[in-house]
Image (cartoon, rainbow, N blue to C red; front, side):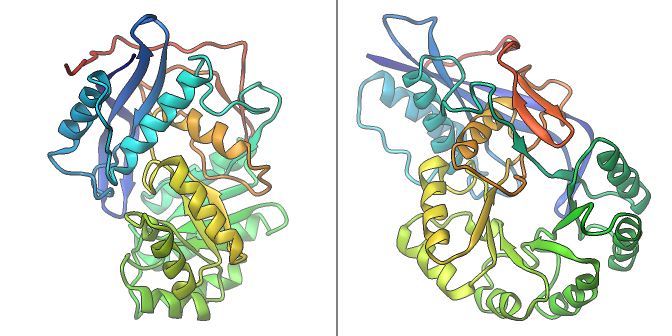
Amino acid sequence: MLKAAYSPYTLNFNFKALTSRGALPVKDTFFIKIWDECSPNKFGLGECAIFKGLSKEDNPDYEQTLHNLCKSINRADEVDIGNWSSIKFGLETALNDFENGCLHTPFPGEFANGEKSITINGLVWMGSIEEMLQRAQRKLLEGFHCIKFKIGAEDFEQEIKLLEQIRKKFPPELIEIRLDANGAFTPKNALSRLDRLAPLSIHSIEQPIAVGKWESMANICESSPIPVALDEELIGTHSIIEKEQMLDFIKPSFVILKPSLCGGFIEAKEWIDTAVQREIGWWATSALESNVGLNAIAQWVANFGIGMPQGLGTGGLYTNNISSPLVLNNDKLFYDISKGWIFPELQWIIPE
């Protein structure tokens, strides 16, 4: 009979992680493991990567829901997670890992075998203009050819000047620039700002305005000189009908898939299928998961035969991340099978 347990874990940022919603000092997460009671030392592992401040799951019932899930598994009761996206993400990872030999390969394939790499974009976090310029220059020196800038925290005029400096030094054939506004623009100023950004040859801009404003977002997508990608807009939309209605109404150029936020891997695949049917592009992005969650997303997305750079992290955000075989070489993410996983002492809770 299958058994389940979970453990809370706090990840500490190694820098001031500034977003349009404020600074993030730490990132709380949970690990979940699944095993056969006859072999307790061999288990599948996943990460229930709640995103406090962004996810609708950020409420006091979260840990109790995870506790009840593990209790249901341990009692062989029927399991109903509802729409708890990050818990689905963790459970799907743990079950897939268990079914594939408990070797941290929830999605076996060429990437997990160390035979294939994933091209990723470099991420420049919000900060002062000087900080963002230094971070951008560092990404360029590290070998990235696609860089995403989070904008919206500083004065827009200053951010324009920063991007102009980058583009003047590095033309589009050398560097692809993506932008993520995290909803910082308004329906009134979005198009004028996009018009000013357009001469800089921007690949795309994620979530220019806040979620839930479908009519305004549709107008922006129709008129924007820069391709628009939906990101946070996808969070909380679960049924196929709702997915189809959103994409048919807004008509974005791209959708950005964060499996821990948009329903887990099964629902993320539904988003892909729905988008591809409408000739809407897509790529996957991590959402501050530990290396456990990042590894699952990387293995999953690599099996799609992707072409464009993915928005995956590098595992280097935290001082106490889980040591893993994930290795970055320039802008290529690898799974080095010669390296192992090293975990800290985790406090497992086994609900009875």
